[in-house]
Each structure stands twice: as C-alpha cells, then as structure tokens.
Amino acid sequence: MFSITSMDKAIFAAGCFWHVEHTFNTTPGVIEAISGYTGGKFKNPSYEDVCTGSTGHAEAVQVTFDSKKISFEKLLDIFWKLHDPTTLDRQGPDIGSQYRSAIFFVSEKQKALAEKSKQEYQKRLQKPIVTEITKASTFYPAEEYHQRYYEKHKVFKCG
Image 1 (cartoon, rainbow, N blue to C red):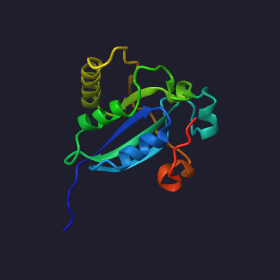
Image 2: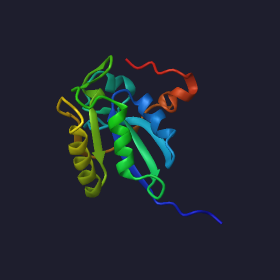
Image 3: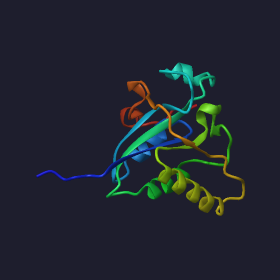
Image 4: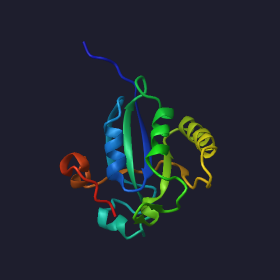
C-alpha cells in the first residue's frame, strides 16, 4: 500500500540558493528543493547569464512539499529566518538583483499567506522588509553542479 500525499510547490529567493536549498532539503515534510532561476524575462538562463544581473532573474529555490506534513506558513517562517529580508538586492557578500529577497506565489492563497506573514514578521524588525511578493513565472532549474551543493562539497562558497 502506498501513502497518498498532498504535494504543493513554493518558490523562494533569499540570496545565494545553495544555503536555501540545503535548509529546505533537510526540512521534514519537504519532498525536494531545487536550485534555479526565476522572476526575469530571459529564457533558459545559465548561471553565467544570471550572474550578470541583467536577466531579471533571482537565484531561487523551488520547494516541493507535502502539505499534510508541513504547511506553507511553516515554510514562510523558515524563509524569514534564513536571510535578512531588509537588505535590497543583497545577502552578505552577494550583491545584485539576482540575490534579492522574494516569494514567488503559485496561488492566490499563497499570496495572501505571504502578505500576512510579511506583515507579522515586520513587527519583529527595526528596518522595513524589502521582500518582493510576486506571481511565479517560469522556474528554470540551475545546472546540475548547483544542485545539492552543500551535500557535495560540505561548504557554501557563495559570493
């Protein structure tokens, strides 16, 4: 007998995707997290394309999760804690629009939950949150060498 799951997707950008991907891949209820690019107009971007900052894409992570085991709200909570959502186009040493903070919603329900979560999280911070909440567009998986980077190298070398 197999178990029936309720799979859903979420897409987050919080700076360099390696740390974000690893965190979500080790979260119970997450089936898979994939590093990639989204949010721009440039079709089929490569890492080199996105690094120029001219594609409009952000380094992002597409999270497939079992909503019977983990809620979208819990994923949002993890997202806010993963990075500094008050820095525009920057996370640590990584600078550029490709490192922006963003939630790419795949449904109106996710949009509403993301906006509510942003308002709640803002109450904890001194500076304004600059995280975009944007309708998801095409997600392009990153090259294989970016997938599960931490597991392969045991180090994050973003920047």
